[in-house]
Length: 163
Image 1 (tube, one colour):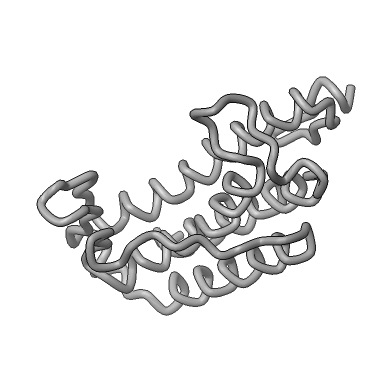
Image 2: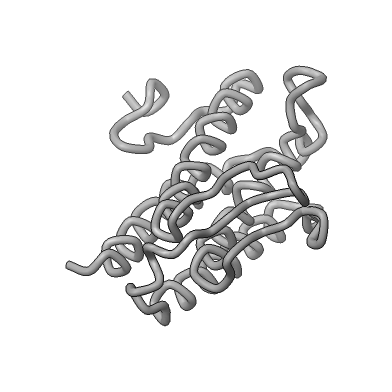
């Protein structure tokens, strides 16, 4: 199996769990945050929904420079918009991954803000990092939802709520 085929398979598999998690977020808690240094539920779920775009960036660009491309999150107002945004970024990422030539994967991809370099990886590692970031932030969302007393679906097996 090619690396890109493996990425596409993993992306599809992880999207099922991500979709489950995003679909249970209570809209009346979008502006809640567990700590002043934490994101709000809206910020966190929007970030999760946009994360597939990082795989697109990895195979279509050589860098992301926040000084020239400032981060501007999409404004999400309800769960329907959140899920639609995720489906849009997921479809875009799958299409760009499927069209990518595997020969570019060893090339360098950089995340920076001007001279400050946050990450310098191969494009393959950057795609992998985007998947890891989705899982990482999805786990954060699970903690947020647990604190809000929302039953959590299983990710890689049953959760404490599903047993």
